[in-house]
Length: 268
Image (cartoon, rainbow, N blue to C red; front, top):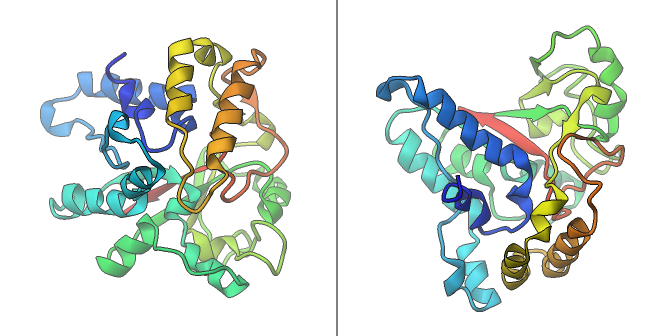
């Protein structure tokens, strides 16, 4: 497992993958594959660009390596589409929701994300699933209407009352149906849990030194370095944080740089 741990630690973005859920994901896939014939085993593809932190000495080098959406789309094309396979993608929301919907609300154009690249450049239809999450505007207020749904359930959102819900302040952001195709219901909000890194992870002096060394401003967010450094220090000082903590009632930001990111599934 120590070698496998590099798959989520030695990555473009630090801190993001320290939550225990990622290690458990790889362990679960490995366990499932142990009982399957070779031809039916689950293939796991890493979507971030491969690079060596030891060779990154300046911010510009890091920016050159951090072309995450472009690289992820290339992986999907090479390893999935060209081999006539299908894939289930797990990414932070801004990588797979149809972000061009925000242009109608005054946001500046940005490079296409994974979904937009696959749909525009490769004529692929991506099925984007928005999972239930606490604190997302109109959707959060409408959860009581989902009480009768089976747990878990996936529902299409186009031309439905759920698809009309707003992920923030009305008139300032698009509706759910403009960003995604379906909604994943996981049960009452009070039953949801969030996976957060155990504080003891940041008591490791060697790992903390590595985190500090790898702090560079991320593309489009010049405050990332300060946020990452302060986050790692704060986590190391909070032994109260344990895996399975209840979700916060405050909504996460679309581009907060938080180590605890909302993840969206995309199936095609």
